[in-house]
Image (cartoon, rainbow, N blue to C red; front, side):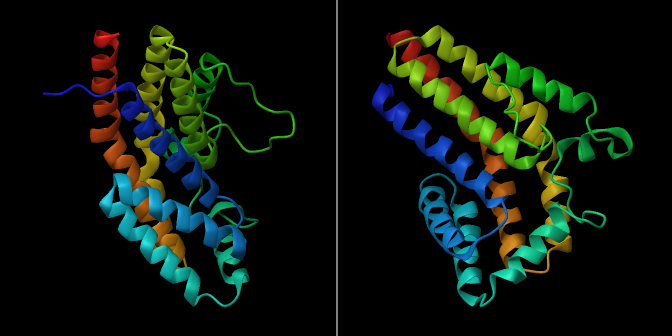
Length: 227
């Protein structure tokens, strides 16, 4: 069996990182032009790594073309993720991982611990709770980016630490609550766009947790042995 090269490894990791970042942006308040470019890019990358999720991204593209008024998407977004009424799909991990849906529970502080281990600090002007879906997805993007940079600098032992943090965070956080969260979206969204976003998110994280992150770790071990 031929070993993977460093460049091949880094190309795959850049795709993983950018996919996480694009998914995170999907959980921001929608704007028509931004959304069109965003979903085009998301579909392109998912087509490389996850056929199921790419299919849902394609449906999101189709859904956007059918929407004549972006306010329809904005209303759906606000109803599910922001309020002011009871949220239909709370975007916070603690809602699903804590007893009675406690906000800022043990799981939230554990996420903050991992952020600190990765060297991140909360910006003073950032208002979202630490376990918001967008924060957690973008944190995975950051961890993968850190891994890439350390590999490029031949700091493989430090890169291995970042990989271990990726696997820990994926297992203990995003993968632990993505299914009930996306089920809430599917059940409560008024637009097909958000239903398909939920399905794409769940399919991507499921494959990441079960297959891709583990394969990445094994490929990294091959690189470490070669170097």
